[in-house]
Amino acid sequence: MTPITNAAPRAERAAALDMQPETFRAAAHSLVDQIADWLAAMPAGPVMRDETPATIRQVFGAEQPLPTAGRDPAALVADTAAMLFEHSLFNGHPRFFGYITSSPAPIGALGDLLASAINQNVGAWRLSPMATEIEAQTVRWIAELMGVPTDTGGLLVSGGNMANFVCFLAARAAKLPPEFRAGGLHALTAKPRVYASTETHTWIHKAADLFGMGTDAIRSIAVDDQQRMDVTALEAQVRADRAAGDLPFLVVGTAGTVGTGAVDPLRAMELLRADADEDIAFLFHKQLQEADLVCVTKSDLHVSCPELGAVPIRQISASTGQGVAAWLDEVLAGELSACKDVLDIDYARYAQAEAALAWLNFRGSFAPSIPVSPAMLLGPWIDAIDRALSEAEIRIVHLKAMATASTGYVKVALCANGQEPVVEGTLDASPAASHEVTLNLRALGEPEVMTRIVERAIEQLDGCWNERPMRCFRPTAPQPEQRVLQTFCGT
Image (spheres, rainbow, N blue to C red):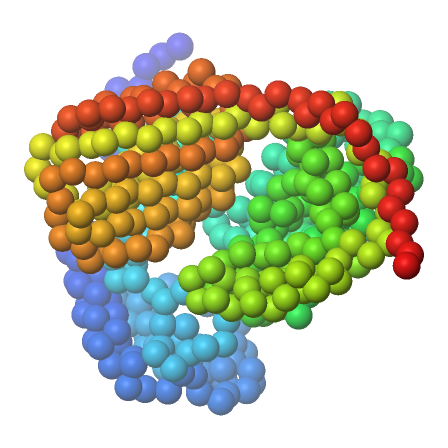
């Protein structure tokens, strides 16, 4: 092969989308000025203009054919910005109430500019090392904000539809037999079922369609008068599907519906989901079925009360006195238990359910190194215990704590990990040098692990404990000596 020695230097190739640094800087500065002016003026303008599609197309020049040459970048960006500013629906407007889209954040706009400039492929760490670490840190911070373990996995996606798709696919992978991935529905002998309220967003239909379930796999559950999923209807549908040989694998609980912002009763749904502890669910349902009357306490904190079929429900509040007198009158008048059959109870299953939930009781006298109020003592301490239990994958069923001092008291209650606690008491009490602290915890976990977590939280408080007895155990099985099979009434 003869080398070429007299070839002319190759001219530098200029791509059509290239911009010189000076041109880019000028266009970018001008655009940022336009955006800043628009953000300042937008609240005083209209939410949107009442324009037809034909008008918008005319402004845009949609009838023009494909251009044969490009335009000056600065002019193109300025003209496009002006069209968007004058002919859009502004979801950041103070009088915009139409949809769920959030207002634009100026820092987000700058972040989008930076992300587009770098244009990373976050499909693998090697392709986008810093962007991947930024994503991982963001997920950890979101987990911390929500009160879940900071090693929780996650990724950023394009929006709500895609986020729910990921959750749907995770449920399918976790709960359906592994042969489904290769063979699809043909590999299953049972029909997979997913449950969602009639108020659930349409993402559920897209997911069932895209991931091979078919929309017939969706069971649409009725809602109550507060637009929340009817848990009784959910339970009946799950039981009917299981009896028919179907395979329930996902219950979708909505924490804020699109139409009304309703939140489904997630705690009750937890006991009905496909992977719920069957013994605990059995105990929950039998207790409700055998009841003559169900009292829902703290009614002053509830929006509404669930329906439980034929079982009457009374709402009471110890703090306000609501319903207490009527409930006592009903009990004292003997209006309950009239000719009611007592249900047959499987005490072996009761025992298993009781044994699955561990109890922890603690009481101690604490002298902080610096005087603090009951609220400042109890709040961070319960947060630390909640986070530690979540990290250990111990599910809180009920947690109550109380701190009492000479200046006042505070009570805290939790019914689930990461839940916003219910707090009451003298929240504005002044700091005190001594506190009596009580903790009662019932959770789905090992007593030894729960004990270590609480002991660690106790030791991390800055101060001195004078006494701190603690007991953590699993209840033993009930041993009834007699059982009434039938009650009779008569004169």
